[in-house]
Length: 419
Ligand code: NIG
Ligand code: FE
Image 1 (cartoon, helix red, strand yellow):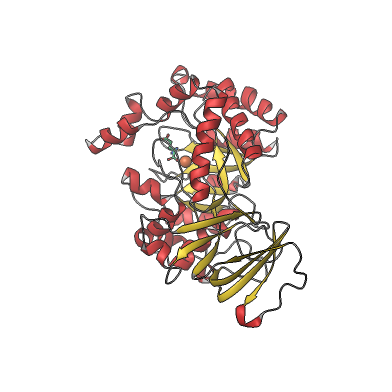
Image 2: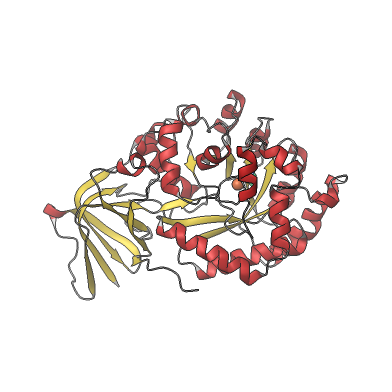
């Protein structure tokens, strides 16, 4: 199968060599090829060039040709942090927050993560799968072509396994790459309120061995936060998970900076996510390791909490990735176009930095940067064509709108899912 896309107004992120994770000043570089063509063979990008400098295709048999007149071609968004599998919604809590309750107060009143866990307990695997497939379909149509999905609304052995089995089915059913993360340490179930370490024991002694046995997770996560999981508790979980080859991707510094970032860096986490509260010591800790900071600006928008200080991170020479945090409580949106827009006007990221953070750096936060996240020969042909727009800056500039016209996954035009 060969595909040729011609008359592309601009290929955004066209690179001859795989860029790998981009840090600091390198995040400003988003090479663009204007008036270009792109060739794909068997799902892999093979070549690109300028229309005036034609010569990429020598064998014209079995060649499908698409005319992209006036459209930009972007690498597909790589969303490295979602909670896409859940049951029911929490729009009542959203209204409660408008009335003045905080996220913490809602959780104390039986809402929050425990509310989602209660709803999930009575949902069947098929129901969860179908609802998640619909959400996945919507996010792919909005340009996402790689995704990470967490458990964490189960909070019992059976329900966490149920969620992870649903994620496994999504991996098999979806055309895009999916990474699975075990988030048993999302909240303490009521039964363990007086015995929190008993729940850590359950995670380590009951959940992790079965998850490893059935190969249900690629990563392990925890909500490291005052009132949720402490540094010693998260350390125990991450050390136990490491014995099964699972690395950490941890929720940290969403509401408080309590030294969790350094602990995660020292534990060799792939990423630390949220970081709305960030200290100089956290930045120093990040500089001393290889853990990728991940910002989730649509969560800040929805909860009306601070935005992750992107300038502090990037200007320190660090990398930054952007993701949605799609979940029913703090971010009921999986729209990476909005995330990129918020990063620009709320976090003062240049569009080029935001594009890189939402593509190649997001791929790196899922350890997929060798295969996805850039328009580079040898990488998977996962990309999207925009509507006819003046410049790539129209993506964040037209915030609230989604200017993604056609999505390609492994070189095939995405036509939607059949359930
Ligand atoms: O990333 N902070 C913890 N977990 C989610 C929210 C979960 C929920 O409210 O259901 C987050 O924001
Ligand atoms: Fe999250």
